[in-house]
Image 1 (tube, rainbow, N blue to C red):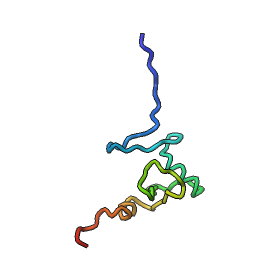
Image 2: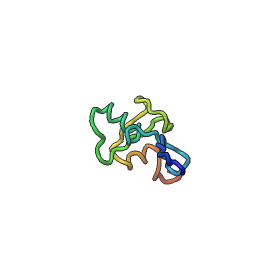
Image 3: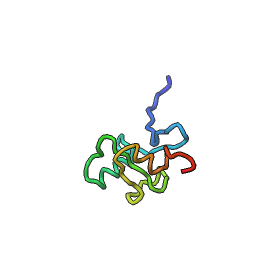
Image 4: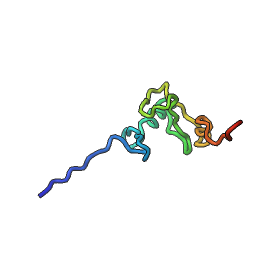
Length: 83
């Protein structure tokens, strides 16, 4: 008889070859941001990695943005070409 072993995944993929480490069932960068703020993140708040490295969860590299639309602005999404 085969024994089945439940394996815990340390990273959850985003489908693009990128992964976010988890801490106690929540993405580590979100837990760290909550610790910095001293409160849980509000609904809709997004944690941005300033250097673009999603594995660099140094508090100095994390920025909490009020919404996904603000996060898109940081990355320059939605801007028309030539402007």
